[in-house]
Length: 341
Image: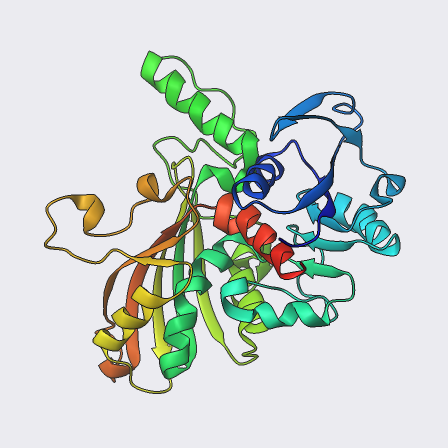
């Protein structure tokens, strides 16, 4: 067993921080001291973890003293303010915020794709965006077959992408609708999410594309070491509690057969192939977010030719679903931390 590491979680009371705690336990991470950092308002409260009662500590620079690994689950502003302090105090940081992802001296890592990039970290490693992780895990084995030059992506992102407040808001709206009551005013989202779709996630960033939509291209280029990768992405918030879904069309430089594509997906780490339209139960025909929640694999199905591509042998379309809080955030971060052992 690896030597124990002193681990801190910044933002331990949020949806991702809470899931990080669970992942550390599930994966038998060799935790020595566990320090849970939160706001001053939460400091002093206790959390039970693996039979231990752990008191929440206010997140300050001094709170990182003696820590070997810090898992960041806070927002961009808090991450920028505090995580460099953790590095100065000798910790290696795995951060889930957007704050450092595109910094040239910070590795951006999906362990199934570019685990080797962890080796050149300077104390800080970035966790990619949730939709990027869920989309690229199945894209990577196909990329190795024919070299992906272009992606067309539509994401269907769950309320969990807005954290615990987003999930609570959707649940409150559904309950109010069921009782015939007036719905609460939306706070986590731009409008009512229940019985609705919201085709904007993030702010406008570039030529009408939102910040969330640009992440797939910008982060994908860095993770896959493909600076010329072209991505057209549309991100939509959907009234699903947990698990993102994505429709992805890939264009390759070289022909890729469907049999080879399915074989590569079936054997790829982090992927479960669910692709049988003749199956009796719908859950065995294709991935659905209802069944991909609370687990770590990205489920892939509806694998087929892109018949709009003039050279059909160079185009493949598929559908995938994955748990945004787990593989899209917490589990990926803990997997990165495992590479540091």
